[in-house]
Length: 401
Ligand code: CTP
Image (tube, rainbow, N blue to C red; front, side, top):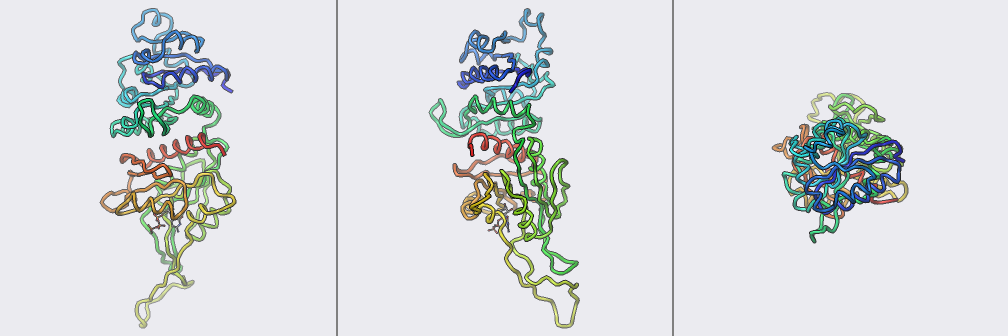
């Protein structure tokens, strides 16, 4: 329930604006008060009268309206609400927000507010996928703006793909979740992270260059959305984020044991760079130089944790997300890896040394699911984590168990 909550609803100028009427109706049914704001373009799609009638409140439209300013100045208006919601958030409105522009009432309120902001983007698929919009989405996520959608589907323009505004019920659920400890409250999310160390003898081991930065960012993003995060980490450079349950392991075999014991979880995210092989007969004494020459090391195959968890018939997480570290032909290899491992999504990244991704601050990923490949621009690992967490929230909301 949303009783006592006050939502400032900014309606942007897109065909999805008509759905915002339903959002207002449902918010009020749940006890929320709604103050609507219309952009000039929104008035082409919905009338101020219908918006005002459904909101049961005055509608604000103009930055330079003398009566409005006398009653409640725009700065005050930007502060009265508990949450500012932009639905639909058009490409233009997102661009203004990302740039910090303030040339109409909606953008001025968004710049002046000190209240959390949630946006429900809605636009043509090409506009959503355009690098400019993707850059703006990343900037907004970095600025702490929460996203609900967009989702993939048939569009009013006749095309198909991501860009469609989330349904009113999903938007209202996201608003309710915001006030109720986050959209993932009550969910268990397991994240594996970092490298594994496979011992050769008590002082030497085989490792890899993973810093654990992407895994730690993911754990932080899920925790911020209210999930109980179980963070299974190898010996990583990056410290675990605050507020998560940390389970430390060294080897792949230990990781499998700890992950299995942590089930059931709603979502499993396998970001660890697990060693594919271990030393078959690790010595319990330090190997010494002898005149017999250089020791030969035989390898044994490690368990594939992602594959084992994906193929569980009982206790499989509702959503299993793997990563694919590739150096060539990334999408083809990752698509084949998704099928081979049996996970739901695979997040492919190019770890060739020239990209600086492994051990670096940024990532450039392609998300592959049953619907195909979705390539995101290069962004901080934190921003990648935020986007994955948002995508998980939308997935769980849209696919009831
Ligand atoms: N993974 C795992 N257990 C392993 C190896 C990998 O759980 N023993 C997981 C990783 O955490 C990642 C995914 O599987 O989510 C893919 O890892 P990657 O290293 O890209 O693939 P590999 O299985 O090593 O395949 P290849 O060597 O063919 O690239």
